[in-house]
View 1 (tube, rainbow, N blue to C red):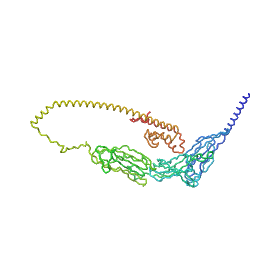
View 2 (view 1 turned 30 degrees about the horizontal axis):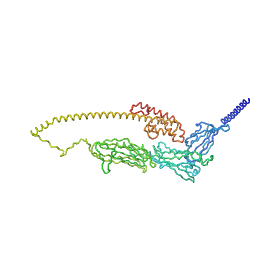
View 3 (view 1 turned 135 degrees about the vertical axis):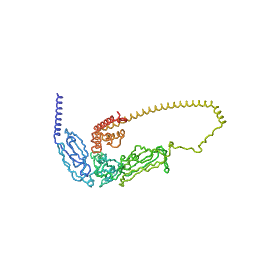
View 4 (view 1 turned 45 degrees about the horizontal axis):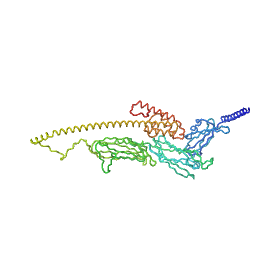
Length: 601
């Protein structure tokens, strides 16, 4: 009986506790929501970024907060959200926090933020003060800012301009990333290595990180380069730890100002038959001679009629990309070379960096076979280019060559014997001499017959040995062909295995929604299996598949924006890639080809 009473009392206490908790929860649910807005820095430099934090005391959907619509004067670069739940003495509290990275206007002034209405609740109002980037008042409160400059603000189309950015940090850097500058229809690449130093500004010590980019615009007109953006964590002292040597981190973001750029079109007097080539320096050289041959500089090169001769042309340019160089094989085919056949190979291109500059090179090997003896004249190869330093047109040229061609052994000329080689005609023999000769010929007849049989036997033995040799080489060649076939089968199997492994790497990265890993895996696959180089737009052009092109453009946009961590289109990109592969297979079935299938099963 006592135990029963205790059980009833325990159950009643639990019911009362749950009732109070439920009342508290209902009160929390039914209470009006509050929205609190704050910014991480105020004032802010013109063109710089700031973080607007919006905290709501309830769980709401992400689409309830639409910063792009509510901040028309600002460039919204990305938004992240987080949720927290706390239970204290039976009372449950929930919060949803939005962090929006926005870029301040270029025009200084005071800008009103809010009040914003989110999910039926109204936020507070703030006045954001935007000051000029060089205002002294900013240096006292800014822990991070960026400065950029261009080596010139007026260039020709496809001419490279160097953009140098400097990141200033008043605290130790914990982690971070610099998002490259952006310009529509332009190729932008980092060049050189990052440099770090220190600088004192208004009595404050700053760490300075310098990075350089080359910007190559592909269209003319007045344009604006969107400045690079830094997002990272800096170390700050924490008062909530028992160990003073430890520090916590704080998120910071800052952006450089946008830079105007005037891009001029190709000059009207540029020769239309030549490729437009703006560069700091261009050289064109040629070496003449076959592989391994050496020729003194003071002697004329001599070859034999019908013998192939190798010419190697090298084009080197400082500034342009490798695909901007004109094709040397097309220029060589236009040379007026005499009685000779010309066989240019496919040109080889390469690009690297030297002293913060892009250096591109193209190499072409040409085989020339003269058909007649004499002197073979190879004209000079000339190439116009635009000097971006002197702002004028110049000419690069590989010097012409004069080669002596000796007659071949089968040139059809009659060779007359010399006087020492001429043989006098014999005189008619007398009767006695004829009789003596007849006896001499008759006496060794038996000996000649024996010698004839001996040579017949020897010829038969040689013929048998020759047949045995042919049989041996036939079996040897058959065995070699069999081994080669097995080796080719093994190579083909390995190639198929590598193709599947590369595609599986793409699929894993897509399933993980890892934008960076997807880009790396796609570039690895397209280089190894499709022999494509460059950016992902080359892959889109190869397949010409609209869904895949759209997904690749979205991937690139997410990779180089502040909200790149929000990319969730991995499965959609994988489906688009599978569709592009299937469409490519169907096109191959419709067109007969001797080439092996691109994606073997």
